[in-house]
Picture: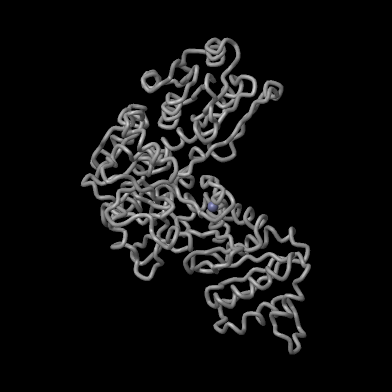
Length: 533
Ligand SMILES: [Zn+2]
């Protein structure tokens, strides 16, 4: 059983190793029974060789008294003679200078004593690292959190097909969203294939179809009604006040911690804990779930929100307030694809006047890059795609040249357009490594290629190294390296001024037309389907 379970924990294992390499205290958080202890044990086993003085496991599940904690740790470390001195002093003396990993399991039993002990040890020594497991964070400044989500297991009686495991998280997400709209909805034998097909068409992201209520009420308005009792209030913004009030209209984007180096420097798309917060954990910052069904925690909180539902619990950092007159239906695509395209142009590439650009892939992100480029004094904006309708739309939205990769030699056409120089900037949105290779080859001297499209994990690309030596750069970009709070209001303003024709990307569907929306998007008939319910 354990081997099977750990197939689903490879992300958490990798993330925990990364965190422990950089930080001295990592806390695995999550509800009781979720598997924190097993994950900690497996992790300790895998990284033991990195600690010359060993890994020491302290089980605190049975400890009820704060005063016992230092003794329990000393016992586990084999410290025999404690004398009359305070046990914490003895412990610090023993640990000083040692390169070891202390694993404190079940800290939620005695959280204050654990926090005191860990804080004292970290402050007084520089060698030891601590891996803690707890239902909730310990609240120390040095603490890095890794939420451990419930494992997603197939429903009974649903045979797993080849490839199902990769999309299972998506199926689970879909079921969660659907259950919020259709009480009692569950994935079973009769609808499993249909849901799997739909999720595949949505690139595994059920939220690719943007939710929005037809009556103009935003899900956040009612958050207080659905927040489980006894949970924490949302973290307050500056000065202890929330940045939104009941009745405000908001856009929801990704979330971030607000405390790590990247967040503090204004790069929340590169938050230290971005993956776990937005995609992997399905839990809040403090390790608690936002959604339960029949008393059982369900992984949700996708992008810090999970909003394909009538009501959503959202992280405050994922929320951006817009004007009360804003038309949320047309603004819905801003927070992901449009943010990515504009951010890539304005935050990352920042093209100089008179420079040239090629955009590979005329989907939502590529077309947004084209629209962003139209607002800059570029000499040439080249859109490359294989679908004539998309190229026509790209031309309408600001591309000065279009290249049909299905029928034309892309490299030769770009060379022709740029007088043999190659383009100064490229945006690769397709996620296809052969397209990335072309994009880099077609760059001119000191050209930069922004890689936005994401192929499956482990995908590699080959490059012509000599061709790359002329000052070329390749930069990976997540969500346009954007700070939603800064960029989204700018985009809303541009739209209001008529300079950002979002209407050209959007088509509306009712919830009954969900399948048609997915099919149209998959077939390239619509760029951004918006489902109104
Ligand atoms: Zn952060």
